[in-house]
Length: 204
Image (cartoon, rainbow, N blue to C red):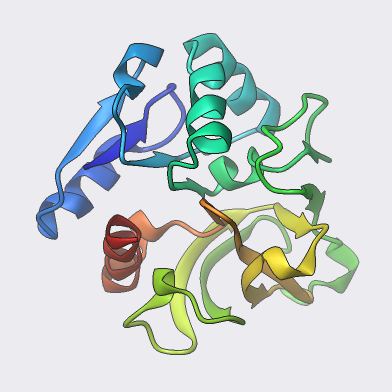
């Protein structure tokens, strides 16, 4: 059973539909009581860092999520801004992050980007795992995933970097620390690559 955290930020139905295709049951959590007896958690997110953090806090689920992830070590995956919220802080806002992975969120240096339209980083890009992890089972070395972001996840511990991509330089597009996973790209928009990755998370 996959529990998808719905705090008003992110396309919840897209994840539900992916898991329907691979016959994995899902449930949606909108309040703390919905987080009882969870097995695995998806934390989606889009938009501005502070807005996403504020909405999560307002939902009343923040403390329960901390208890489940940091206390009970329930597997969780953060997606896009959901990943960025797992860090300590962001250049995009003033609020503190969840602190589930020791990382800071940085804005891309536009002077290093060769594309005419520099930000956001939008579209398909290679994702290259740098260590073996079951999250990427069945995916070729440079599987393509869909990105849409202007800020990236900078791990303070290099051992937490799971995969990298390149946009004006290499950056961590996936991170992993104990039971906590984060991916910057959108698997729910990445066709069979994303379906495979989300199915792998269900099997962890």
